[in-house]
Length: 339
View 1 (cartoon, rainbow, N blue to C red):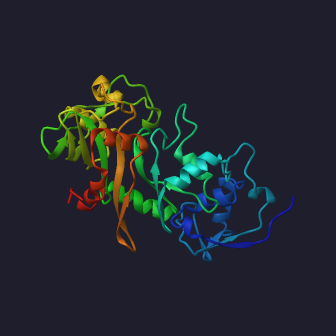
View 2: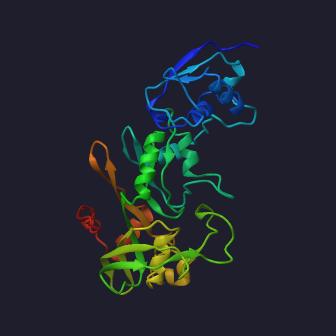
View 3: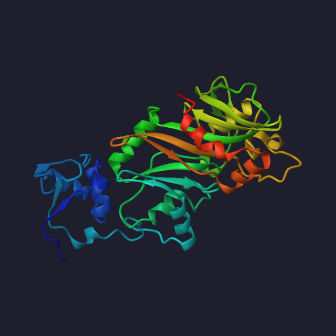
């Protein structure tokens, strides 16, 4: 059986922060974990000339010594998808190209269209995570947060393991400020305020995540603490209002549940608002009118990165029908009302 020669490979920037065993899974997909562990124990695999363990975290620029291996170690086992990049249709490639909002060495920001799931699930074969895997030739893009399938707007993807870890921690720590735009049916009791209501999973709901559409939440005294700030940006009489929403916690379907709890369900949200989530007598889209409009992201070079995503077509059309002025949108974005 033929063997490879001893090789020295430099860790690329996109793998900064990745575990050594996961690096090998991508770069030597046919090498079993047991064989990898033995090569590490005997010192045949080294990182910067030092012994390492499977869970050793790599840094960009480090050099991995790889001993002679069977040629099969380079090839993924039969039936494995390791290293495979799914083919994209021209329409999906154009969609992702058009959705690009921002890109630098660390991250990519996309304006996700409504109706596209972020990740796969039961009965969901087409999703953003799968599409981006075949979008770019260089490196893998890693999701660092989520949006509901029917919610449009900003979604961040990291270009390296290190960047993914930093962004994930920033989201968990509340260091990334999120602003959503929503059109709600009715009018909130005040022009601005907060919705503080604990959220729990509704009993009897089918198992599954948000991507399946099966999970349903509710306000419950026994639920997890949840806090949302809101500001009314414009009103269409008593029938509807345009809100800016800032979730201070990250509960499943938080904004949808909180708006319904306030007595103003999000337009098109039949799941939580039932028939009350629709306006009779107007030719409006029945899609969910919830959009991740802006993210303020701490950035190692820029200090703070302000990302903004344009409205999807159905929301823009509803804005026009209800008389909400998008010409004021840029000024509203700059105001950062949550500070």
